[in-house]
Length: 326
Image (tube, rainbow, N blue to C red; front, side, top):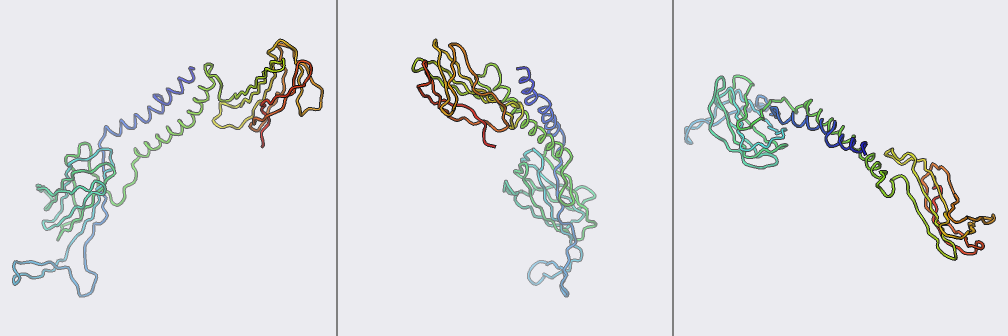
């Protein structure tokens, strides 16, 4: 029973549980960086001969004209919530080195809540900014942003997250690599899972083999009682897996079969399939029918037993374990 307590402690509150608990506590206590994936940051230009980028300027039909634009930079960004924190009404601000800029925010992939543009202040050295309130961004969700800036002084931009608690934004050029802490957590969970897989069968078998259990997991017994024609017999057959502590059932097995005379008279016995003579069994005694080791799992089969106090004149069907098929 002490071994059982030790194994249960190992699973519930021991080394495996300590590894997982420590990892989750450490993960929740620190800052949670989430990536802003930079998918596009490039100059926009027309590659068709005779075409230029232009925009409409002026008021009214007669006062409007086209103005060529030489320097337009496009940004396509994805904000992905890789933390365990559900962001509610968090605000994200983008800042650019240009006053002339337009922006658009799509709905999040999962929550589908509409992002709301809110007023913001611009700090140096930035010249233009956009700020959006995201109603819901649960763990694993993502949202797309697109911006176009006219005549920016550089390709740089800034980003900040407000009302995010422990969550901060980290710019990533392309898909981010998995963090070491995430890899450690996955390894710890896999280690715990495999440990449980290996330990639980041992615990179950130990419980089944405890003294309080009526029958163990490795020893299987079948008894046939004969109380007839003046004979009282008990035919007991047993199959015992010798390596029962191992998680796999690969044998070998021990087969034992006995016939006990529980009555007050001598009885004569003979197997119907046997060509030999009958044999007696005295009251209170027993005889061993079979005792051998096998490498194939035993199977339970029926056999015809002849018996009687004056000779084997009566017949009964009993169950015995025999060597199984390979």
